[in-house]
Length: 340
Ligand code: NAD
Ligand code: WQD
Image (cartoon, rainbow, N blue to C red; front, side):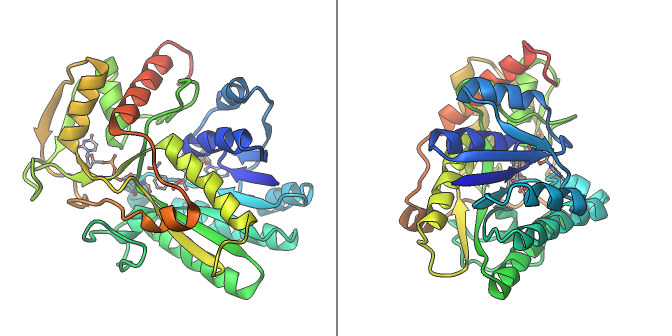
């Protein structure tokens, strides 16, 4: 099978390409390098031993996207990662998010329909659940989104549902919890541009000396140690779930045209637990302080993962220790190279 990966130079896309190729799939990738670097492709070639079939395409450019897809009509399925993902930026620049995340998805679906490509795996997010009672399963209510970014994920899931009813499209939407960590080679990982918004890159950048101090956003939450709880999932486990989703589509295991799965570990860890685990595996004492709560943070969220285990035959294998160690090895690799 031939799989097109949009956003293939990005954090999750690049790890997924490795696992798809390992599983024997042919992979094509597109990206506009809005939040990634061409050097990722060289590092992917080092990991896989193969040149990545890549073209620079912006999914907002409908004509260019259609031209590309029409020239590759033998694509069997698309994994759609390309999107902007910074929650805070989406509040300041909502139109950027609606144009790229929603408009880009519409362009992609149009191009796929024209080329008779009828299988798609979509990157959704646990953010669609807002403040739900964990463990959160796929039937949890979807409240009004708390950010334009979150809204784009809700809207895209609705668009995909509608399109799957209107034509012969099969959809797997994957709601990721908190992806962290990096490939064991330390050749690919998360490359946040500017000051990181997310906890783990902020921890590793502080440990390496790029940031002076990590602020823990609040320790007065109603949790055992007072800090927020999340479900941190290793990016390689997440990548393997995409291979499972492609197998699920290929083997027609679905019972409905639109299927949705949570991708998490099922385990919740607090911010302080993450920091302590990082310190233990890295041997670095982290400079952190307790600060005020961050607006918009939910107290605790972690996934119920039974559906993915039962239907996709997938569950996570890696521990929080492996997450933190690989993130640290990646940060050290960035520091010793010219990337970023
Ligand atoms: P990322 O920014 O590392 O990867 C996205 C890639 O898409 C980047 O390489 C970027 O350059 C590319 N891209 C963006 N707009 C594009 C466009 N118009 N045309 C072509 N390429 C474009 O992000 P990621 O962490 O790998 O996230 C991948 C997907 O997973 C996104 O849809 C994101 O919303 C979703 N997601 C991410 C997280 C997370 O915490 N990382 C959690 C839940 C969901
Ligand atoms: C984790 C915890 C912070 C930074 C975001 C998006 C979500 C999804 C995943 C895309 C929280 C705390 C963080 C810091 C801290 N992305 N923290 N100091 O907010 O759970 O989810 O990424 O879909 O949509 O909202 O992840 O890594 O930002 O925060 O104390 O410097 O770490 O308060 O409790 P979050 P995060």
